[in-house]
Amino acid sequence: MLAASDGTSACSPPLPAEARAVPMLPAMAVFLRSIGVDAIHRLVKRRSRDRAQVAHDYESGDWRREQREAVWRRNPTLIDYADRAHLDRAMQVTVDGKLVTMPAPSYYRFRRHKLASIMEEFASDTTQLVELGSGTGGIVFELASSLPDKTFVGLDLSPRGIAVARTVAEYYGLDRASFDFIDLLDPDSQGYRKLEGQTVYSHYCLEQLPRETEAIFRNIVAAGARRAILIEPSFELLDLTRLSDLATWSYVLRQDYQRSILRTARKLESEGLIRIRAARRLDFVSSHRNCGTLLVFDRA
Image (tube, rainbow, N blue to C red; front, side, top):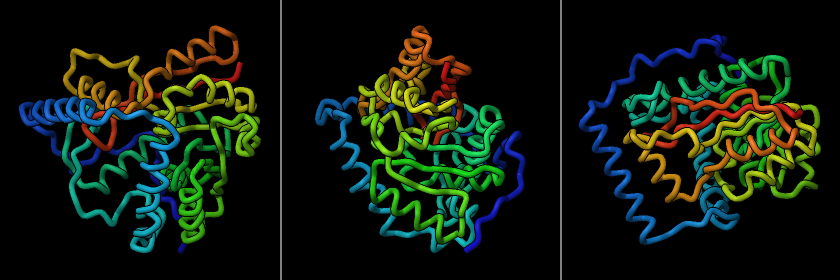
């Protein structure tokens, strides 16, 4: 199969015409139900986000399922695969900060352009992007579909994730993407050697390591990365007077996810190690909660 680009400019992500706003009262019910479920879950089963939990959720969970289902065989082009064209169902998602219902492929197409626009804003001066925690390569393939002038390196801890990503790249003939191993907690991991002078990014990866944020930031700086573009959840920018943000707050606590990414960056900036270029909330996510925070910093 051949890789393809749809040629759409990433600077102006198209608003999905199929999106239908969820009315206020049903939306409030969604958030309240979510908060209630999270509270019960925390009482019954308190999670601790560690290697064992991550391996259970991904290596033996999501990544194993993706390997078994091999949905790339149901999508004729890379763009179809990136947009999940095989999904024939609606999703309740957040788009432009609003809870909406829309077809799954429409949402993923929208997200693909949103992510590409972020990369065009902060990585227009580089030809290669390195993803930390690339999993099965989903975000690499989304970006490669919209940014045909860039090459990609995906780094992950999961052997299964790396194997799936390599299989998909080979299936679509995408020679602009490669995948390899990294242990983010080990500064001597071979993957860190690929960061020197590079622009790196993450997408909901560091949320899995809430107690290791500072160590990972220091490893990224020590490895010589010139810029980091991180899309991760964060407590710091939530407004707890908003019901949707309360739902995010309860969910992050339930899952034991990331909650100190900005505080950590400011600490390293105060030490003169990095320079923060941007820190802002994003307004899209494939759910009703847990919109990301965009943090961009340069090595000082």
